[in-house]
Length: 140
Image (cartoon, rainbow, N blue to C red; front, side, top):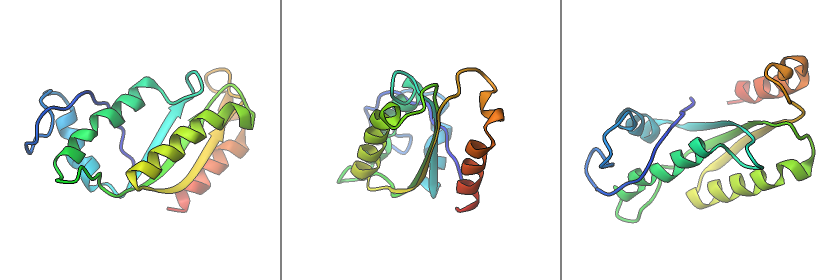
């Protein structure tokens, strides 16, 4: 199961956890019941996209519904494409992802770093990267 979330800032503790009324109200219930979260992002300046980061900032609304600010327990996968293709290139993303799932108490199910993809469609010429993602998907 995959969830893509775009979110903002939180101020209330109601059943609709965010004061901002937008499509996030459709995402919150799906997020709460999802078993697995798949984070898929191109690399932007050695990190995930701003949109994906904002999603996690806004998901704090769900934690605020709990007395101890606990997040729902999830399993998680990271899929990332980038131009660079070295371990140094992916190190900042790896540190962020590991810190995120550690603080949330989530379990990592796997990571696929698809480097060397400069242009749209480049990954189609890298069957090993596509197979790695496919194999990870089949494993869940």
